[in-house]
Length: 194
Ligand code: G4P
Ligand code: NA
Ligand code: NA
Image 1: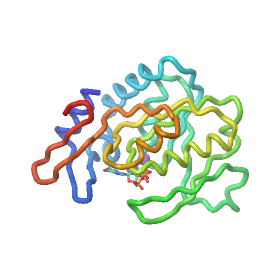
Image 2: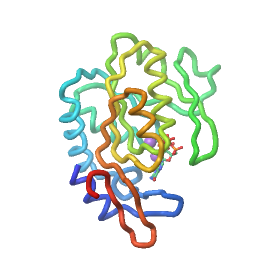
Image 3: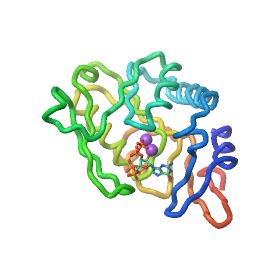
Image 4: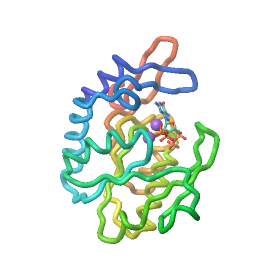
């Protein structure tokens, strides 16, 4: 998506450890007009499938998922993190290993909001190692719902997440795939632009 790639080049900041900061428009301050364009683009890419629910994960997936959901005209459910199972009640849970944060956490969704007959699109802001997305896919599978695909705003193509998700046969649409980035020069190469 050219508009998004232009914005990443303009306002993204490359940090050490291959981290791309986009908090001026994506996951801290949020540019809602851009989010609207992103919503339209996901709707266009998934025009051929039926979706009745969008599933994301707190915290930074929620904002983008809500705007995208307006274009699909469906509700958003977000998986919660770190609630202990025994106080959570009747929930689907999955364990997520975060490489960035060096820890394992539980994610959960109430059984009330996900189940057989649902056609679920996953939406998230970033795809790096893909463990969060794999956790969401596991919740969908457990619930008996159908996973129709995953929409990601920025995929870090040099990390393993995208390849793993595609290998599992999950339809993945990433609007910008960063192939490489150079902290010294500030250069970002996107897949397809080389
Ligand atoms: P992953 O396996 O699920 O891909 O996540 P990983 O542990 O690699 O990354 C941990 C968190 O950091 C994730 O946010 C992920 O979206 C985010 N992240 C990974 N790479 C980058 C990056 O280059 N830039 C930015 N801005 N974020 C990145 P999270 O656990 O979902 O946390 P939250 O921010 O949604 O609360
Ligand atoms: Na994040
Ligand atoms: Na996220």
